[in-house]
Image (tube, rainbow, N blue to C red):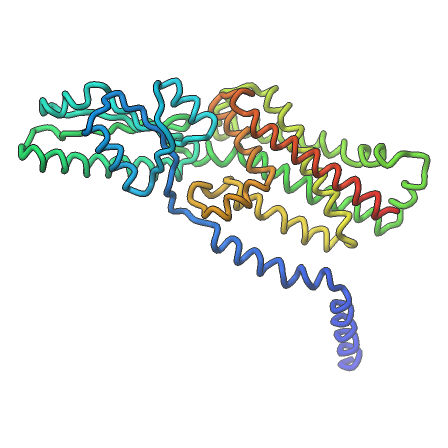
Length: 371
């Protein structure tokens, strides 16, 4: 019995050594993920892009702007001329916060009755917005102390009151932020994993070669394989939207038909990525391992769980290479902010580019592999 066990064990190790691709994934994937995510994942949100509407245009208002900048939690990315421009910048994602200094800011300080300023925060991400809110309060205290030191007076009211106004998620509910993102994550997991394994399974059974030699074009063959998954993806998306609204009261402020239309590019991109995985791998185990290797960065680097503002630049660049990063902007933009195509065209164009590029690459690899 022991001799038979030893022989079987030795045979399995030989088999594992011969399967270099699986062995490389077993050792390489955990190492790469540990190094990548250990450096990339941060929860301390800093350098939130902020725009400024300075209607006072005085030395005192510039002092408040400098205090906000010097906290290190805000990066002043531009000056705006109106509140409408603030809304446009936040909706397009070029800014996540705004500082509004009213025209009577200096007069209120001089009269000692307490000046007010406003910080508008994109609260769709509760973690980022919480950090921004606490930083705004700290900046108000620092500025008030500076004003008191300069005046030498002890007014009954604080010299400065910075009022924070959270947009899109005023209650800072984490479910409002997470639930829409679940649509993108589940679609990626289902489409990449199931598509890749389904095609590899056909190859293992020998039925894929039988389909190829039938009088069916390879384009029709591929479409026949992926169209059912498109339908399944839309069904899955609909179920999450309905349950999110019923169970978590997720707002749906924008156009649902627009969201379904833009989702098509994301679905196609993930299906093409699943087909690409199937051309690289030979077994279902390999397909599963490689699929999870691609899915995990989507979860951690796209902004689904962790704020991208807190990530180092390298992690942001890697996140920009993921379709989910752009689809999350579309999901949260339509559902939480109610914005339309004029604000989402860049993310839509990126998704279409991903879909087109991955389709061409997967078709070429698929043809080459089958041939």
